[in-house]
Length: 363
Image: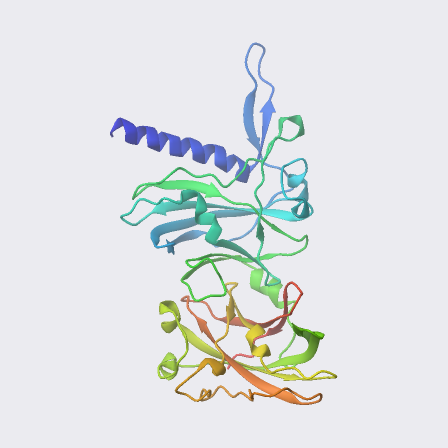
């Protein structure tokens, strides 16, 4: 091996070793024998828990670069991990989670963003929110340190691999549904997705779902006269043939054109006293088993179809909805990753985090 290549490989290995210490345990100074310097060892806290993620390799495209990502483990830490560390104040009372994964440059081009892969990796929770990335660093009392876990070797060449990890935080008591990598960096868009599910995650997620037909008041939107509340209920979720969308003027990217369309029909009623405009379908999300929140394509963006999709009924009209009136709206959601399928329907409320969620009445 060329000397420069050997040095680069050694530097990558050293970077991985120091980096993984922050994922596999806390570093502390261990007293040594008389006359010897103390050794820095890695100790795993007893409060940490291994989560049953389905580890394995997936081929992904990261910002046009071909990579392989192999998830090796997922560990749930404890709130105490954040004590004394340099981390955003609002994250200190949350529970950190540490996914460890290997990145391999599988394409022919040198990868210039080795330390950015985790930006497109998402930790999806059982309440359909995403874990927030945390950048943890700094010395802690007693010589204990939780190493920063977002460092990687510079510009890996084709065939190079390195191990790394990241830190995500969730509110206490919230479980993990899956890890996902999205080529476009947004899980609610139509990019290629790689998924690593956590066993038991779907069962935990299902306990918080309303049943189809259950009615809730939801914050729909804000106008100059305030926030409106509408009772909303999903009517149906139906899989359709992609060929039926070919003649429609839906704005689809390449992945969406190859995806599986699902029609989501939702009925809402205006309780008054204000008259809302019927476009709440834009807040509907199709939630998948893999943890995705897929936005819909609504009929009003269509051209040649005259605003109608066969089998996707909609009462959308250019008028306000009087108090007491109901409207039915339909949106088209494209599932673009193989093996994933709908699990629930969510409504993104205005001015509130999270979703109001119903079990998907799939037909």
